[in-house]
Length: 172
Ligand SMILES: CC(C)(COP(=O)(O)OP(=O)(O)OC[C@H]1O[C@@H](n2cnc3c(N)ncnc32)[C@H](O)[C@@H]1OP(=O)(O)O)[C@@H](O)C(=O)NCCC(=O)NCCS
Image (cartoon, rainbow, N blue to C red):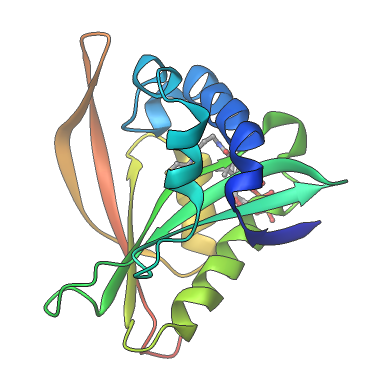
């Protein structure tokens, strides 16, 4: 297994896996398949290359050289917000699940967030019914702090979103 930041050469593989994620796990993402499918490869490349100001980084986990999962780390640059960063869009392809890739990806991103000067906490949101992802985040020390009712509406059905936080400045 290899974990690294994605760059523009990964755009095609990322886009294929991202569209698969939106097809097979629509309830786990706020983006929709149709919106994302319309993006050109150049747009996708621009979204996954590390932002020059450090505000967005996309990490990938690879098995036998193939992209098997990804997660984004978003770091707001504004003065009042830059003590926090957000995890978004976590996915591991079904054939690679339950073998520790998600946990390894999560630990790599947490370690990276710790290395960013001034970052004290990591937040994320997860569909309140997504027990697999909630167990994964819990095992890394994330704590739930609230639920937004009806955060997503998918095919006419509302879904609650649970918000979680990991403090990086307190020992676990
Ligand atoms: C959630 C997801 C990323 C987990 O990836 P994974 O590579 O299978 O996770 P791991 O094998 O590293 O599992 C780590 C821990 O997470 C928990 N976990 C993972 N899958 C689980 C499942 N199906 N049921 C219960 N717990 C689960 C367990 O605590 C597990 O530890 P264990 O194997 O020692 O019991 C993956 O299932 C996925 O991509 N799901 C669809 C998209 C999604 O829900 N993304 C999250 C958006 S917030």
